[in-house]
Image (cartoon, rainbow, N blue to C red; front, side, top):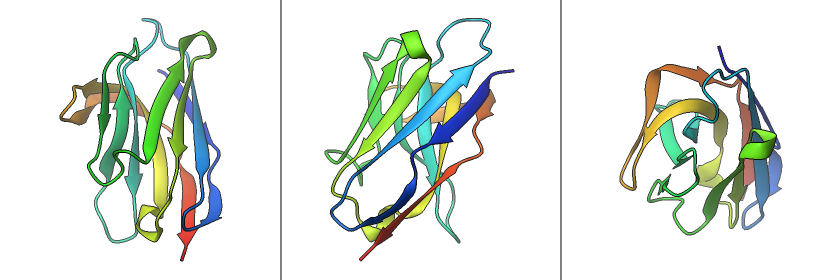
Length: 125
């Protein structure tokens, strides 16, 4: 079982930036495709940004495309999400996921995916 731990959430004003980090450990098969999902109160969980194990393929939800950037450092087993120009509608609990299926149009968690506990991002207007 892969252990996933997120960090970096917080409170920021609209237009500000945050960087989330996620460390994944315990994988027996090396690096996984990974991603960020979020869930706001009263809304369904949604995929935000995902990246392949090599970093060559990325997916972004339309609402964050151009503002968020997912990168990874496989030597450190760490995934990052740089979030710029944050908006109040970005307020949510953000979850890191190890084990997703990703292409340029979609990102889907695998049945056996490992989820972190989440980190709260709150954007004030």
